[in-house]
Image (cartoon, rainbow, N blue to C red; front, side, top):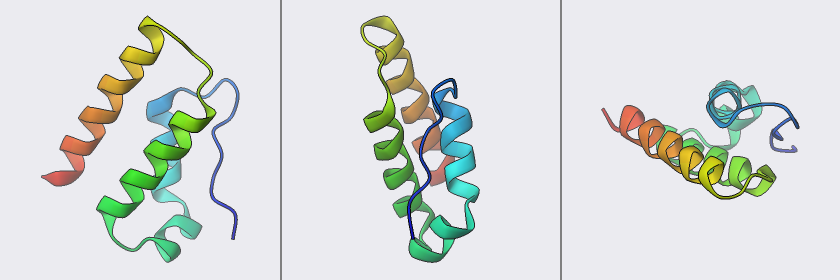
Length: 70
């Protein structure tokens, strides 16, 4: 089944949250750690922002990783 894709105007955090809760993702990646990695990868691939915006997205991804490890 196809993986979720980030919408053009969707921010990184909203996309990762939507991706993590996707039934397709839960079925294909039962491990929460796997889902986080795949969702972040999908988000990065879709991101067209550069410079400071890209750096701020990386901070969002790091926070999401930390939250899921607790």
